[in-house]
Image 1: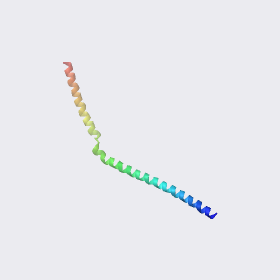
Image 2: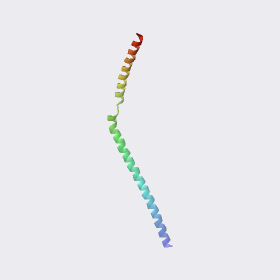
Image 3: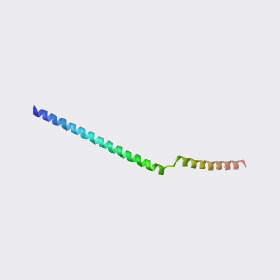
Image 4: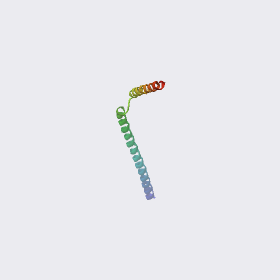
Length: 82
C-alpha cells in the first residue's frame, strides 16, 4: 500500500511539474512578446517626427497646389471666353 501511494504521488508530482513548466514557458513567451512590442512602439515614437509630414506642412503644401490649380482653371476660362 505504501508503494501505491509513492507511485501515485510521483505521478502527481510529474504532472504538476509538467503543467508548471508549460505555464512558465507560456508566461516567458508573453513577456518577451510584450517587451518586443514596447521596443517597436518606442522606435515608432522616435521615427514618427522624422518620417512623416506635419499637418501644418501638409496643409501649406495643399494650399499652394490649390492656388496653382485655381490659376490654371482661370486661364482655361479666359481662353474659353475668347
